[in-house]
Length: 113
Length: 115
Image (cartoon, rainbow over all chains, first blue to last red; front, top):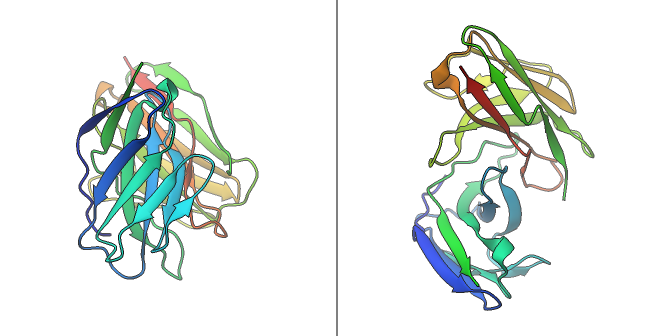
């Protein structure tokens, strides 16, 4: 799976949009971009994923650049409960089944009151 | 999203004993489940892939005789830490992949403390 690069930490004011960047310059054509977050002492929570089109769900939006070498996760109105470590992961789905995920260090997002 | 549960959430055991951790997919079937380990202030590390009806696949450096994995049904995988030692104290997390979703969902984790 391709390697990702994320800033180690970010701050965001409560109520503002939090924009978390991720670089994945070696991404392959069949690799998806996934975002998970981990709140302290809990299992990771799935947020969103995409291949090349922008995606939106009830939690967040995912913006993928046209060349697919980077992406941004957007939390539109951050709350204190969004404080967590956010992981950007790229992976392919092979026809034979799923593989385990490779987690980097992620971005520790701190929402300030 | 799909729900994955783990039991127990916390366990304390004496050195030399064995501990079993269960991982269940509650609303979907999973032919494949995964086990991860997370030490304090570190990221999750994949330990092994659990395959229903066949042997688990272990990542390099993970002792298969120490971390026994059984995937007896399409909704249950168990991880047994045998002869646990203090260095096995960690946060163990499982995940499962509903094949129609192309997404892995994680359990809440089990915190193991070996005294």
